[in-house]
Image (tube, rainbow, N blue to C red; front, side, top):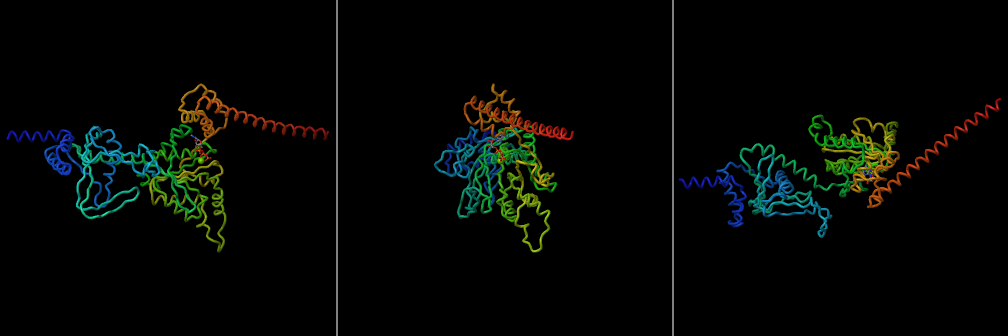
Length: 498
Ligand SMILES: Nc1ncnc2c1ncn2[C@@H]1O[C@H](COP(=O)(O)OP(=O)(O)OP(=O)(O)O)[C@@H](O)[C@H]1O
Ligand SMILES: [Mg+2]
């Protein structure tokens, strides 16, 4: 009796102590072929005697992959395993789909984000969430049916070979008292974290419409971030806040029955960072970009098909809409010209900007989530007022000439420079001339030597200042000579009439 009491106590004690010890025991003393069965039986016994609860997360349920399994895999690989000290065997995987090598098997140019470290079969890792301990164990069991789903990149394969197969699963063990907390808080936390990790690691794509009137993608490698964009600080913060609010408002857009989309108009002279800002927005949101060359689109039917074939969580960009004067002209013609009897129906063949916006409203309210549309122009005043009216573009953002705050951002980007004795001279010059951030960036990039680069910029600003002064003087001279001419004419007329 006493001895059975002692053995029960031992088992309870074992259950309460880390299961890592039992895993160690199994690895050392039990043949690997039956380790899983023994571990499960052992766990079952412990479970009955202990205060622990285990949730099983299998790779797939029938033919359907289990999102929770994929999320746990991503979460553990990125957030838990790399810092876990208990696991003794780790697996490493670099996928050809995700790497930066373009599929070249010999390349070693692999981003660290593409390296996935996971725990091996039978290993365990501990994760603490809000002070609660969660133990993860990866396991494999044999299934009688050799069928299921395999994901290969974007493709999903169903297979059914007959005969037994291996089914991967995780066991998540924690104290019984945290049952609700685990289901309602910890598991959703893993789904959210996995999404954020995947978004971060995702290689963005830039799509452009080609001659075949279809989208062709390339990897978007633009490194722009909001930190690196030189623009008014308040405007930048307002834009970041607007984007952050937008992506969190799924329920709001659903409730008000509107398409979950947001429109931005970026305007300003060439070289002020409109395209750079778009790349920064894409990088911030982890959205792909669809760069639509509207003048290449043959008909409204093609436009519709292109728009349908953009994915959710993407940015549709139409650059230089002032250059699409033809498109605006078409808009005006359509409004003014009554249709002639028997004339071909132009509505279906011609693409217009307002037509595009109507499509976008109609299409995106019925399909797809989280769409952003951005128009850029060098001349806002040349745009049809209908395009600018409220509801069409939610935010108008002016990208202007470089000021001293903008210069600081660029100096930090290009030379990691926060302060320098030459800054005072640059500050006083830059506020009095029209210089674009692109021109400043180019001057700063001319030399790796900070002194030479800054002096080059001072020369550029001084030249611009002189040119502006000369132009002003010429203008003044011209108006003085006109005034003098008028004066002489008046005097001559007066003396003639005397
Ligand atoms: N505001 C800015 N912040 C940081 N870099 C900038 C900025 N503006 C311009 N640059 C630099 O100048 C280059 C050209 O800028 P960008 O193409 O973004 O200008 P743009 O406004 O789109 O010009 P365009 O009207 O001709 O299309 C960028 O690659 C970037 O290096
Ligand atoms: Mg541009």
